[in-house]
Image (cartoon, rainbow, N blue to C red; front, side, top):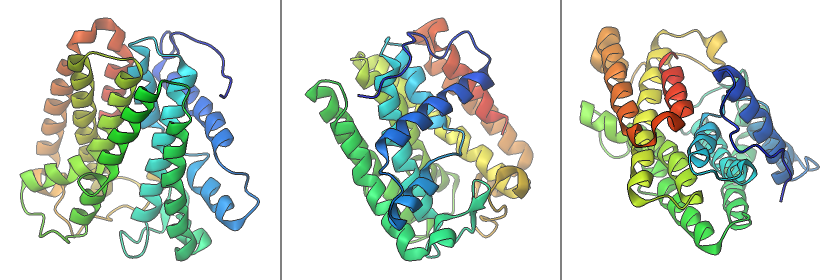
Length: 298
């Protein structure tokens, strides 16, 4: 088990930006202990795709949820690392020519542009089992391990993340209504955010009601995240974002459906709903409230 500085409240008493940077730095250290050394082209490409960039919002959410139940941060960080491995796989595959055909990711060439399409496919293929290997070696009970593995399997499978990608490619019929968009967003983006929150609750042996509240917060957080992402894709600066804009100009998005003013209103409404789900946790949920407000700022 990786040894990290013990801190019973790692997400309190710092500015929010400092909290994000702190989580990102600690997560990076954990990921480096999990990833194989870059002594082959495949392993070099894996490190290229996983390390050194991104806001690590999913990791932050795992730690913030786990902290509600006094879960040691070194355990929560390993679960966060597993989720980041899955997220990295999804981005590598999402960028492929047969998918979104994106040339840039996080201010550098996407994996298939840097290493070739075949290698990028294999990078994604390798990251999925590595994530489950990380969960199966977690210093937690077999029951907790099993629950995390089972739920993550469901979330990223053909009724979750993969289903969302299939919808995004218009392989399940056209995306034509707000209901279609909400379903697409929930599958492609929301469910992994939901799992990040639920994972913290699973680690803390939380009650069913607390677990459901956190999962619902994660789903609403994912909805806000996607709405803001749609706005940035249509109105943002590619140099600031680190990836191409106007990628979705030929698709129905929350921006094209609602317009700028309508989208701002919907984001505010969703933020209010998300914050209400945290009422059972009182002031202990301050980091979760802060990250929700942060993501709404784009």
